[in-house]
Length: 430
Image 1: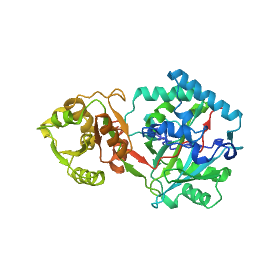
Image 2: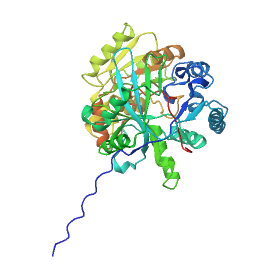
Image 3: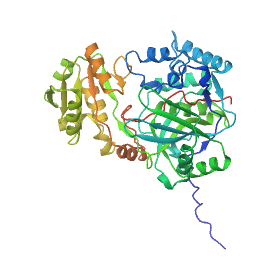
Image 4: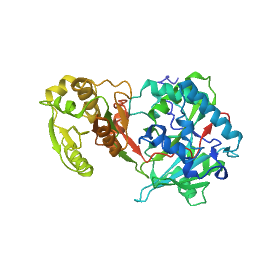
């Protein structure tokens, strides 16, 4: 008689991407496709960014992803009303059949990125199918959840990366074949990026993509708050429901490596003289009377040897490095991997913000997170605050920490290029 052994391990579920009927702008109803697009909601950073986008076209997607009204409830209701009106008028129309979407971005410097947009099953964190690498801010998740509930839509895809087999994979083969066909849409946005979109509706090709992706896990490159929002909304609705899935762009970084950039900090309430005086005896500080590009080169050189930051706000740059070892031992939590303890973002938040400068990290009035380097410096100089410019983290460090289940401080990285918002939406009632 055969002795019963341990139960067979069930295969881990991987990425489960589902076709959907995309909601897209009718080119005949808008000024241009470029004029109705926007960066993701959290990258509208320049002083007149929101106004600029709203003025570009009365149907710009920013009116849905960043609605403007007196209260949060009024903003969300306004977005829902705007979406209903645009659909009723045919400004936004649904594609006739479900599909996955191949998306291409290209800039003038030779960068080419292609990926697949679809509705991804929202997995539990314990499944380790989608790996976050940064902490999230609860109030931002609550804000995005309120907007998605009101509009009953995923208004913009978040960006996920996976390590596939490059050109050898079935998904990549479909992507490359699609890119050789006439696109559904093509436009060039004011940042110089050209965008093209194709739909994949053939059942056999969709099946090949889905089977290929099912063997992989993904890293959240951009959209931690939206992914957390997907999880919250899925938990609120009995399954099965449209809330079991969320809109994503998946990019195989073996085939198309992403750029990794830093996200900078602006401390509006901390004048640069106060920031510098508090560092005496704790960090080495050197004043640099050079333009921004040379200052960033100096930051990169210093970052090779250890933690380094570039402060601005008084018309010059101040290179901050060589932190006191005893200070780090007192302030950086010791219960995390060494790779986490030595991150610049960890030292910034645990040591500089919490203990040296005593700046709370509770609201934009205390800390603003800005992707654009020059805009961060400009805002600091104009408003009398301190800009903290960061050096980017390598992608392999991010992925290794994520696989260990260790999240980095919020807004530690900026992967790109990010998908443009407004090219394809997912309405949950379709």
